[in-house]
Image 1: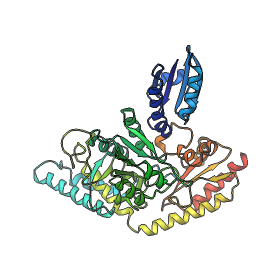
Image 2: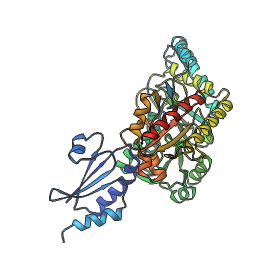
Image 3: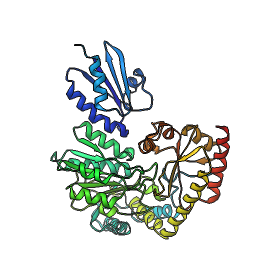
Image 4: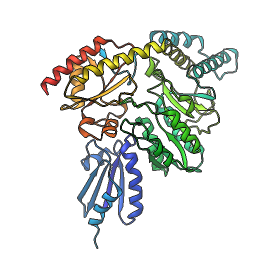
Length: 88
Length: 370
C-alpha cells in the first residue's frame, strides 16, 4: 500500500494537514508516503486527477486507488480508512 | 471604469510618482558610498526612516526595507525562527493569513517546525483563551495579521501581543491591509510587515519593522544595506517615496476613514435588500473591505460579468488565485457554496456613492438571471 499527498505551500488547509500527515507517517512506517507539490509537480497533479481543492490524500493498494480524502480530515478518520486496507 | 479592488493594489498617487522622479535624480548616489553625495543619500534614508517610524507610531523599532510585503513576511517568519537556532520549534498562526505568510510557515513545517492553528470565534477573531492554551516554551513565533485581506476581519492585536509576550514568544503581524487604513495596536507587535502599493505608493518596496531587541537572521545575503538584515544596494528613491506615500495617506486620515465607513454602511444597506446576497464580512470588519456571496453563481463567473461592465473587483486575494474559492470565507462560514460564490469589494476614500450604485444596478440584473 502507498499514500500520495498533494498540497501547496500557499494553502492554509495544507498547513493543518501536513502536520497530520507527518504523524501518520510515523504511525505507519511500513506504508510508503509520497508527497507532491501542487504548483511544482504538474505531471503528478494531472496523473492523480487533482482539481483545485487541496490538500488531496490518496490511498493506493496494488496500484489501484481505494480511497481519496480532499481538504481537512482528522487523523482518526484517515487512520480508520488506512487500517481497513491493511492485510492481516 | 469602476475600480473596487483597492485591497489588491492602488493607483500610485501622482505626488508620490513626482517625488520619486525628483529624488531618483537628487539622491542617485549609492547610500553606502563614503563620499559626500553617497553620505547625502544615506542621511536622506535615515531621515525618511525616522519619519516613517514616527508617523506609524513605533518608538522602539527599526525598519528593514524589502521589495514587497511577501519578501518582508518571508524574512520575518524564516528569519525569526532561524535566529533561535532550534531552541524553539513551533509557530502559532490562524486560518486567515495571506499566502505570503502561509507559504513560509508551510516551508518551515516541511523542515520540521511544528505548527499550531489558533481557533477563532464566529466573527473570525482569534480565540484568546485558546491562544493562551497553545502558548509554551517551544513557541518560536506567533503570526497573526492585523486585518485579513479577504473579509477585513480585525484582530485584537493588543490582547494577542500581551498573551504572546507573557508566553515568552514574539509576535509577527502582517499589517499589509491595515497600514494606510488604520494602525491600531501595531506598536505592540515585534515584527510588522507591509508594502507601499496598498496605500497609493509605488510597487517594488515593502518593509519589515522590527523591535530592536528581536533577533533575526538575514535571508538575502551580500553586503550591508540599510541594515545587516537584508543585503542589496539601498533603493533610496523607493524608500523616500514610501515615506511620502505614508505621509500623504495619513494626512486628513480621520476624514478619509469616516468617508469609507459611510460608504461601507451605504453598500451594506443596499446589499441587505437583495435576497440572493449573504454578507460575509462581520459588522466590525475594516470598512475598506466588504465581502459577500451572490448565491447561485460562481465568483469567477460573476467577476467576469462585472468586468465586461468595467466594474473591477476580486473574489479573494490575488495571491491565492489558484484556488476556486475563498479559503478565508470557507474558514469563517464553513460553507462551501458561500466560499465559491464570494466576492470582495474593497473601497477607498476615492470611491463614490455613484460607483456603488452602478455595482448594485448590475448585481440586480445578474440576480434576475440567476
